[in-house]
Image (cartoon, rainbow, N blue to C red; front, top):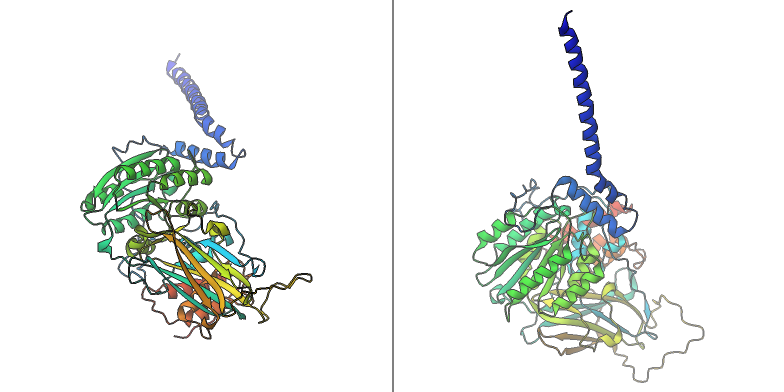
Length: 581
């Protein structure tokens, strides 16, 4: 008998059986490996916080990006994205292009309603804290440039207005940290109403006179920061600031993902190469323990504290905290406790799709700092280089504004913006109540829309059974009394500034700065639904901005008019007028 065919047949049968057993073992192993991920994914319907934490942890485990956080041997730097065409504002500097909006958008914005109209006879006093944040303007710009209509709650009128420099005259002496400018003229959307503009300008300190700075870069390196408009843009923005550091300055770098770590101990501004190398080594991966990062950053800042110097933590993040302390109110408590040490907190927002605007803006407010959103490299340069003096050095703390309107002259009023900065009337005189800070050279603008008694511009019908206001001490020449309180840095007692606003100060022709502020206020209102400006439309906003003759050396006003065009198209109101050159 020929045994070779038989042996061959038996061999094939055995080989097939082995392969089948191996496949079964592989399948069983894969099922076992996937059990933790499946278990985590099965919890996604429990709570929002578990959803974010579990999804991040499962994704990190699948991609093997969670590393030991001693940062002794960091991986090679991430290759930056290809540059976009040069920006008209900084022609020699390419801007990083934002990616298209992700399909699932989990960005977080605080819900709020516009300030209501108040009857002066019932409520004559308006009190609020100043705000120097600008993040809403650039964040809205990012969405418009991406072809997305911004959600109404992402639009904060005061941050839209305060993005622009209105050229207020600064004080001539540091004894008074800021000047106050006022103007009153007709509202462009309602000739029966007046706009009252209050402008504050901080004392301009030359960069050479800014005290030595102790800066801690607190950088989010979690997995959610991997896209080009996040960590790579963040690194390039910080590099620009690094080039401007002085020998007396020192920088530390703290990063956080699943846990926090010190990447760079305090390093002199002369050793720029060491700082730049540390930035180049940053890599994104893991979950996000922002609370632990904040605690470590403040610890490092305290260890390197400079008496009579600038001490500040700069937090750069998309705000997608998902492990440790990540509740906004708990984080605010953490930061509020730390600010007592004299260390301020600036927050810089990056990215899209999961950006937590509410958290970033609120932490800066509580941390005696400011909030900005960086959507391209030009904005990074604006915030961290061009405006570094005002970003870094605080010249007035706990600045509050209180306006008492004269009910004999003013029938109604409405504060434009500052909804999340409102204070109680008695907070104004209480030096324990926290308020906003002003940096060197900072501009702050506030607008009120008012209607005068007897002009027919009232929006609220009078009460049938209400008693007329009796004002035996009424001053018919005064519209309102403007009061400001502030503290010199490091002092506990506030100082008071008072300025009456006279009826004779109403101007028949608004200045360029008031027209620009009004166009920005109308732009914000239209993005929020256009409830407060009557029949004023996008074409009117653009015409008003185009009529301004103020200098526009950086092209911000021209860019703004382009955003008006885009907003008009996205809101289905493509009625923007063509402006002749």
